[in-house]
Image (cartoon, rainbow, N blue to C red; front, side, top):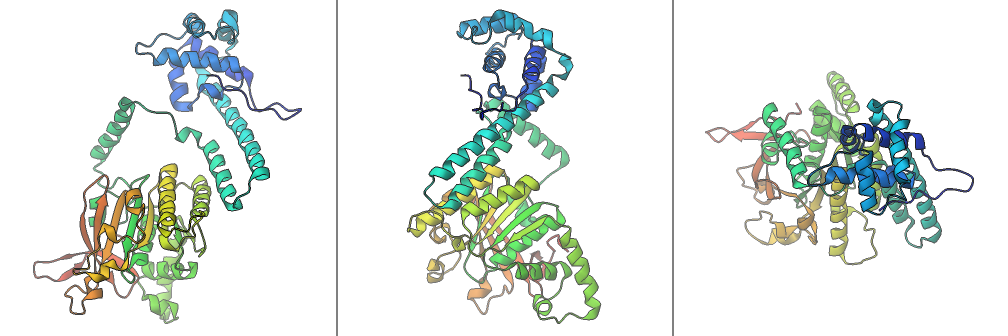
Length: 464
């Protein structure tokens, strides 16, 4: 079905280039191999054409190629297809279709003509979207922040329309996936997502995967914030991944001090209280310079909801493609909906973060509190049912990890400073347990291993 052109403001004509449209169609009639390149490399669709008859002609060309036995695309086959569909007269008739190939400057430049058409189509969609936003402003009666989020989502969709397409055949999906798997195998890649630089955890997860919602949950004092700030630091500083950290619990000053102490291997308390020896300041300056070069972004808004997080993430992603987004933590977020039911509120937040992960095609880590049910049983190892106000958290999450420290509950524990990272749910991989140790002088976790004699040996987390 043809799509009508954008409504025209009085006295102006929407962005369009009819010569470029005719040249695209004429180039395909001269050499139908151009059609595949235009579809795949430019992502041109029938509704990208401004002139309705051009929409019909291009639609016919695509139909001919998508048949079970593809037909050659030329003036004769296109006219025949349009006639069978009852669209030939609306497309300008046979004479117009045949004339298109005569107006092509150079058939070899078909992709350039297609890009001109595509760019004008994006501009027209922007006009339509902004007009709709204006109309919504005049008629909207709800929370203005919700309207801002709707507007930003609509504008993001205009700018990234090619990122979300129609249904794909399993054949196309398999070819894409096979190419990726072959590259991974050839290059010997074990971590295919964003690495956290804790080797055993990266081995288990393969890195945090695009489009996934990762939930990291624990009771208080287990080190949730320490772990996610380590992950953010490692991904951005060591691997150049752009990371957005929304910290509802710690201020940006506290985060900066934590990052500097970690990078410079200084006692965090000494740094905060100004007890750094003069000979250690070069190390602090070097760590600060290294952090300053990292694509790490922090937001310490203490009153923020899912709408603002999504809006800010979209803006940052448009400027600097994100490799990871972290929210610390879920239960401190402001509910944006009208419901008073806490389970439903948390469910809306977790669902919103999952949608954001899919929309931007990035991994999103949501830190979450566990309920007190953990404290009432022995052993106190966390389970999925312990997710506080779990509502949809478990359902939305692709990966659920718990932090458990035996020495928190047992004064005589033979595992001081050790933390078990329990992967309790992994939608696309194995579950299991990885043990890290907290380096007491620094705000940092590290991988470790035990030698046969049972001694703890720190192996490092790749962050120095």
